[in-house]
Each structure stands twice: as C-alpha cells, then as structure tokens.
Image 1: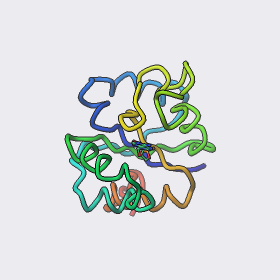
Image 2 (image 1 turned 180 degrees about the vertical axis):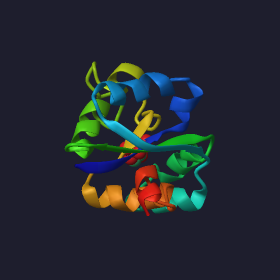
Image 3 (image 1 turned 180 degrees about the horizontal axis):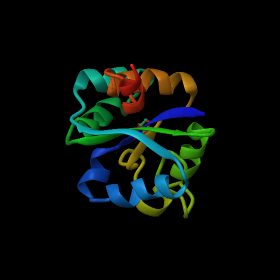
Image 4 (image 1 turned 90 degrees about the vertical axis):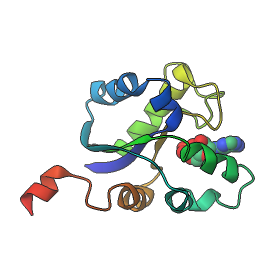
Length: 143
Ligand code: CMP
C-alpha cells in the first residue's frame, strides 16, 4: 500500500471541477484518507516546487499556485503513485490523452488542474508540507 499527495489546483477549484475529479479517484477505488482546503503561501510553493525554482516558468507557477485556494488530499491505494499519474495524463493539458483528467479538462501546460507526487520520496516530502500534523485521521486516532 502506498500514499500520495494530490493537490487540486486553483484552476480546478475555480472552475468547479473538484467533484468530477474527486469522483475519478473514488471510482478507481482509491481511498481519500485526508483532505483540506488551504491557501498555498510563497514559502510553501518554493518548498513544494524546489526542483523548479530556477526554471523560467517558476515565477508564473508561484503566482498561479498562490492565487486562490487549493484542495490537498492524501490518497492511499496499491501502487497509488503511478495509478494517480496515469489517471492525470501527461503534465501538459495540451499533450494529455483524451480519457485522462488533464486530457479531458485542461488545455494548458501550467493550469493543468491537479498535481500528484511522482515518487515515494516526493510523496513523503510533499505530504509533510501539506499535512504537517499527519495525513491520516486513522493514524491520529490510534495514537
Ligand atoms: P505539476 O505536476 O504540479 O508540476 C510542476 C508544475 O509546473 C506543473 O504541474 C505545471 O503546472 C507547471 N509547469 C510545468 N512545465 C511548465 C511549463 N513549461 N510552463 C509553465 N508551467 C509549467
């Protein structure tokens, strides 16, 4: 069993696509074990996107991700990191295949609706940024 961090980005929240996209994860049989709406700060953005901070698109990415609330989720499932990335499709909505979330709903490289961790190491790191209190209510309850 794995856990991943999924972020519904500002474009997803503003376009009122949260329900549709959350349904894709639920219909696939994945378990949403924690969820919250929050505003990403510039500090959180730099920590989350540390590998992109020097890239030319970073200033615009930070402006976008801090522009309005996001929804952070911790999702559990077998092989969930690659399963979620398959459901999302290619990073750019311009290249993502029809039938994937980005392919069906995004026509943008930056405003691609959803972020998901790309490895177990990224998932551990990113879950700590968005759920510093711990990602799972079951874990909290059993402490
Ligand atoms: P995400 O999966 O959150 O990881 C990094 C984000 O940077 C990516 O989704 C896009 O939102 C954004 N991104 C990646 N490449 C580009 C690009 N070439 N131009 C603008 N934004 C990009």
